Length: 461
Image (tube, rainbow, N blue to C red; front, side):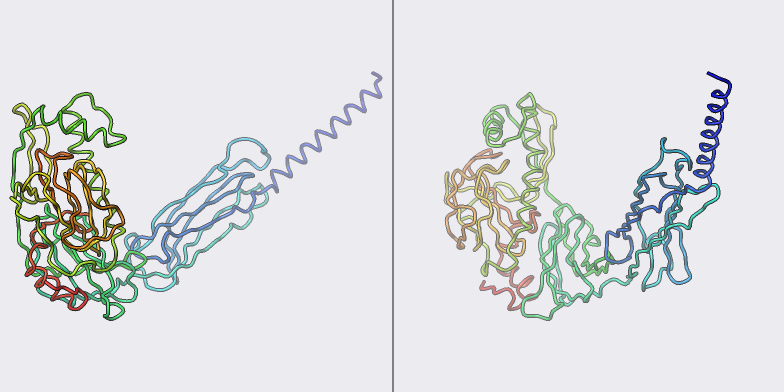
């Protein structure tokens, strides 16, 4: 190469270097990040005690820089969330950056004191990644929501509410227009309210129960909630009668388990062999029992919202009581305790394969082999009230069928976890087993339910 050619090459290289340096300088001086995309979503239609909020931010080029979230109400600005990120440098087209992030938090009176009812804004301020000579204005987005702090009005209209542990009752009440959910909370159990037919628009009633294992009546409250979780509570139980459960010891024998365990497992898909007869029995007695109970709660959710019955519930004819409601059973095998379960029904026996009648008018919602209950029938009587008939030798009805009080629905037997031929009978309210003796008592129904509900419950005795 000649000296002249070598000089031209050096000049070209110098030019390229200069252009590169200029481009690098321009990028560093001017290449700011793009405006981040921002979305704000609230999990409730307004701000109440605790409204969940999610903010999503995205900037795929240089990445996110800084973000802060504030609640703005009038002159008040309260910080809610803040994050800082490390974006790419202005001249970088590679390397790590945070392209997207999600911020989840709660806002409401539980977090911020002295909130006022009225509009408030959730404001998101997202900074753009700066350049040396350029710092663009941040991107600001707002979501305006109403602040709602007052719970719905709630007034108890009925009186003389006397409930026993394990028993049922009814309450009549009125809620304000902001209520979207109402009913009775009794410990862990929820008993939804219903419109009171023929009454005012806001008058309601609820059947409820004091769970058999609930000892404190202060845990029974009438509740009304609005759409953001503001809640009004009212005490309404005038008298609570304690009824501690009885205790019983159930000896387990290999002969009994050899009879019941294989039969139940063969009828229960998904029931895995635990490796021994006793372990299989214990899985049935605990896990399958819990699954059966959960299914009963599920069935109650589709209960007909009207009274399907008008007379006293029937008890099995000429039956001897073999076991009481809510017995607390201890199971003993070879002299040692192996399990504890609650027996939530009455065991009634007369003759072998005795006819079993429907306790009252209703609709069959289950008629099949049903876990620990063996062949079983469940009748829906409306408003979450159901009756269960277990251990049947045969079933004489089909699911979806309407049945009349006293109709034969099957025959007693020893299917499921039955030690002999009998009927396991219980009443259920929203899936919770309750004491059947009240429903067998026409005076109790008249005094505790019909007097409160009047013509709404067409009780004929």
